[in-house]
Structures are given as C-alpha cells and as structure tokens.
Length: 611
Image (tube, rainbow, N blue to C red; front, side):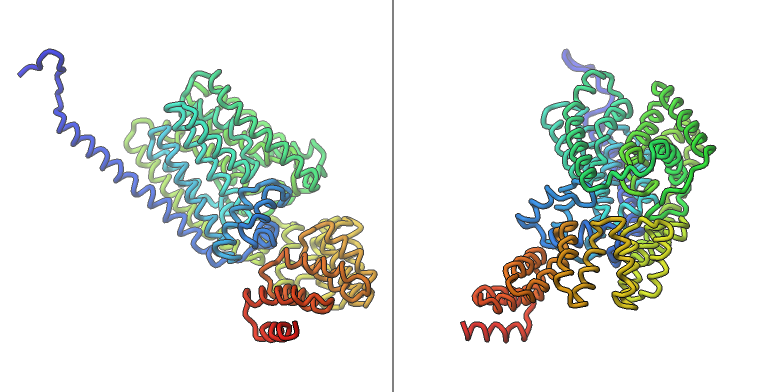
C-alpha cells in the first residue's frame, strides 16, 4: 500500500526504529560500564592505602593542622578563610573544604586523604564525560581519563593532604569544561553562568586556573570545532576578568609573604623553565625517580638548555602548522604548554625546580595528542586498532603498578623524604624534613646528621639552623643550641621556631624579662602560634603587674584552641588567682564538657561551693 498524500515512505517501521534505538542505548551502557568500573577500581587499588597514612611535615601543618581549620565551620574560621594567606596563596574554597572535613571527621588524617581521592575520582569521571560528549569518541576519551586517573605523576596531587587545592581546583576545572561543552551546544545565559561559577570556585581553590579561558579557546578549536572567533573571544572576556582579579590578589599575597623570592636571575629561570618542560614530557612517558621536592641544580649545562629550547620550538611550530589537518595536536600541545605557564618558574615562587603536582592538568593535553595521534596512525586497520588498544591497556596497567608503589612513599614524612633524598641526591628541603620526622619519633641523634647536611647544602636555610639547635638542645640543653638559634635569626630575624626556642631557653634560665622579646617576635611572625602565646602568658603570670597581659595571652590560647581542655583549665586557674571565680567556673565547665575528668570535676565542686 502506497503512502497517502502528506505521508513519506518509511522503510523502517516506527516499532522497529524504537527497538533499534533501545538496542543502541543498551549497547552504549554496556560499553560505558567497564569504563566507569575501570576508573573507579583503578583509583581504589592505588589510593585505598592512604586511609592509613599520616600527615607529612611539608605544608600539611599550614593547611590542616592549624587552629582555624580544626575549629571547623564557624563564623570566625569562615572569615579567616577569605582573608588568610595560607602558604603564600589565597585559596578560601580549599580552606573551607578542610574546615568541612574537620567538622565531619575531626583531624583524622586518613579521612582528609580519602576526600582527596574522592575529588580525584570525580575529576577523572568528569574528564571522560566531557571528552565523550565533545568528541563522540568513547575509547579515546576513556584512554585520556585513565591516564589522568592512574598516572604515577599524579600521586603527589592525590596522596598529599595539602594538595587538596590541586584536586579540588581541577574538579572545578573539569566541571566548568563540561558546562562549557553544554553551553557550546545551545548557548544561553544560564549555561554560561554555570561555566563562570565553576571557574570562579576553581580559582578560589587554586589560582593556577588563571589559564582556563585560554584553554577554552583551544577547546573551541578542537574538539568543538567552533568557527566564530569574534564571538568565542568575546565570550572569554568575563572569565579573563576573573583570572586577572585573582592574579592580582595572588601576586599581592605572595609578595607580602615573601614567596616571590626572585633569588635566581632571569636567565637562570628561563633556562630552568625550558629544561623543566622537557622533564615533564619525559616524566609523562617514563615516570621514574619521582620525588616530593626537586631542588635547583647548581648549574644547567648549556647543551641541555639549547636542546630543550630547540625541541620546544620545533614541536610548537609543527603543532601550529597542523591546526587544520590535526587540530587535536595543536590543541593538546598548546594546552600542555599554556597551562604550565603559571608554575613553570619564570616568576619564582618557592625553591623547587619543578614539581609533579604541576602536571595534574597539563598532562591532559599530552594524553590527547597520544590518543588521537595513535588513532590516526591506526587508520581503518582493524589489527592496528586492536594492537593500539592492547598497548593502551598495558600502559594503564603498568601505571597502576607504578602509581601504587609511588603512593606508598607518602605514608609518613620518614618514608617520603628518605625516598626524595634517594631520588634526587643533594636535597636540603628533604634533609630538613626527614630530620623533623626523626625528632618527632624521638631520634634526635639521627636527626642532627640530617639537619647538618641541610645546613651544609644551604647555609641560609634558617629553619634548618633552628631545627639543628632544637635537636642539640634535646641532648645537650640550651648551652649547645643557642648558637644555632642565633645563626637562624641572623639569616631571618622572623624565624618563628628560633625566636620561640630562644625565648624558652631564657625562661629556663629564669630570665623571664629576657624571654619576652623572643616570644613576642615569634607571635609577630605567626599570630596564631598557640605555644608562643601560652608561654608568654606563663611568663607574664609570674610578673607582678602583668596580670592583664597574662590573661590576654591565656585567653588567646583558648580562642585559638577552643577544644583543648588543658588550656581552658590553666586559664581557669589563673582566673581564680586574680579573683574572677565566676569566669573560672565557666572555663572548667567547658573543659569538663570537652573531656570529663575527675580532677576537673573536683575543682568545679570546690569553686561552686566557695562562690
């Protein structure tokens, strides 16, 4: 029967067409399931072990083990998050995430580690979904996501609690990228606003995201293949304004905190940047001898600088020349180069030559080049495609094994920094941090050797000088340690530990008046240094006429550590001493509520009976 007027011939009936669509949807789900399971199981296999890991001494105390974070999400701590200069950076969203952890889990290091793993897994899934949506290439998108999820170079970002800023900001990066892929399909204000909000949250997690608007232009080129460049550039202006604002805030914070050391001349920084780019490429394909800290070398051979510069120029020229024929190559290589710019070292922040964590986002560009380049090489050959798929699976499995082993080194500061010394050789930062771990585990004799090595490698390392003094004081007393504290203060008059330890030594020598300037200097350098406030309060409490000063310092210790019953009990005892019994009762009641104690209960009964 022929179709009537107004109808069209349909060679496939509607029922059959619906069945075909349903079968296609089932097949898509069947292919999706192994990808999702593989991503999750791979991440779990590598990182489940971090649940038993400790904090490390490098940056973790700054971000997590401080009074504001440990107080949880209070009005005061939230205000602090938006005004603090944590490790010379402005990252309020990261600090708020740590506070949320403290609110939920306390200071348990395993829980903080697992939250990092959670965000890493979310980022891997978002990366896959974004590329899958934009390219329609399921297998290639999965390969890029697996490299991101499993690569050993990413272990530092995930297994280091302080690098919450990395996993959190990258989660927002990929969330914004996914929102942008949706926006490109049907541009409207609300979809654009989703991009801007996710990007803004990412910037407030880690300012390295300032390159995101430029990465979007590359994403426009490929895989979105948008062609209206005037519109595409205009769309990025609000995002560029956000980047500029955060860049100014970050620069101001880093300059005021002294992080912009600019110790090395510009020529040396350029040379290190050129070599570092090639180091990152090498580590992507051969992740050996990874370490938590790579010190600058005394000198960089000219041939290495020239060779690295030439290689970068050649590959960049090829990538730009390929923008019509192989846009994935152009996009991937420029993504790698561009997203590394904020941390490549042209503006020197800190003393590291390069860092594994800086490749967390940039490696995506190299992975895209490899995946789509391999697919182009395979062409339509079924056997070549199978061989490349097998090679990709083998590479991912090898990454799992190597990443699992690399994660083990992050168990504690001892394993981490011993491995760093083994991998890099002369490493003053690793020597000092290993010494601190040995002090924490009550091995001052072993610690001294590492502090001495750190000082020999870098005589201007004030903290190592002070730590050497602390280790010697543990064995010999203050007489042997004071020269090292003094040496630290000659390098850096604001060295917190040296000022505090010198004040402590003066106090032990019954020179209360002489200890005060050192404790006050420690507090000026670190206004939240609880022990310095407490010791200063103890000194004032023994000096006639300084009761008000003592009360101020004791109250500050309680404000900074409100959950410490011992601090509240000592404050209560001093309040009794100066005749403020009612306030003493309140402090003891709070201490008893935090940690019920028979002695505290007895003191409370006595005070209530006499009041």
